[in-house]
Length: 364
Image 1 (tube, rainbow, N blue to C red):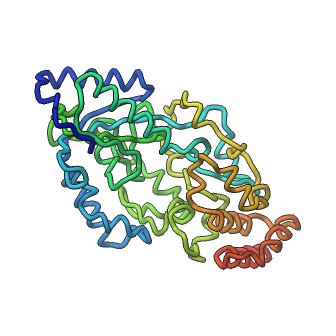
Image 2: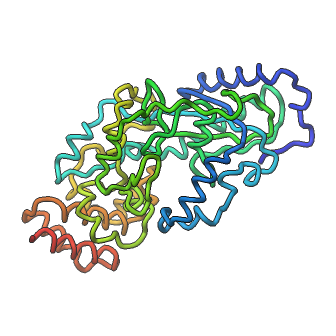
């Protein structure tokens, strides 16, 4: 946490006014909504520890390693007294219809959040600008900016700050907005007043709806508000660096990087607004591109064409692994078979295994 010997906020008396100013500055910076919360996450911590105990984090060992730092902000950043949470919409306007892409087995489906520039960079820079604006107004203070970059329970904090509620698919939802947005946080030592009354969170409006549970291709939403990451396509195609379980491969379809199915069917996303952020516009026509085109990329092309994109983080081998599975799920034809056969001797054992599976699956 950034600190200063001269803690200027100690002389500030009107914390409520500062909180109002922060809301205004956030809107001026382009955030769709901001909120402030305290650091008490007892219920979220219980949910997290139970999830870890059941092994539903899969190979994401870092989730267990960080322990309670994730649910106790002051353990991660000593001195944290309040948290500023912010929302930035990312749904790109005028992009290819995601339903149409999913319905075409020869096209590649990439999660909408990954079509443009890496959100970590965009949102972190924006959050830092907000922190700097606060510093300009009150002087040096202790803070640290986060954007999905450390053990932070961003959805639980955003819910406490009034930005929305955690839906049955475990994504954050907001009225008149849906769920197509990123979240960022500023941990601060300022005793800012919370946006919602103590011991309350945003009202849950999921009601009896279960469409997100019903549509999940791999049944990863094992119960309302409970996701088993080991079954989730986003985990399988992004977080998992090993072989994708054979029984799950046919269920992945043409999803090569993430999955949006639970968001696509959510009734609240009928109200979603397109983002005004040009950084989130699709690059390299990734919203409407063939599997074969992407499978033909060399490693050098992959690195060049995913520069500045969150996709690069999975690496070239996992990229080919994912596309091989999708090609194995597509109706067999000569072009697909030739492309797969050309990768049979790939240097990566991981790639070869999934190519062999795809070739075998395409002949059934």
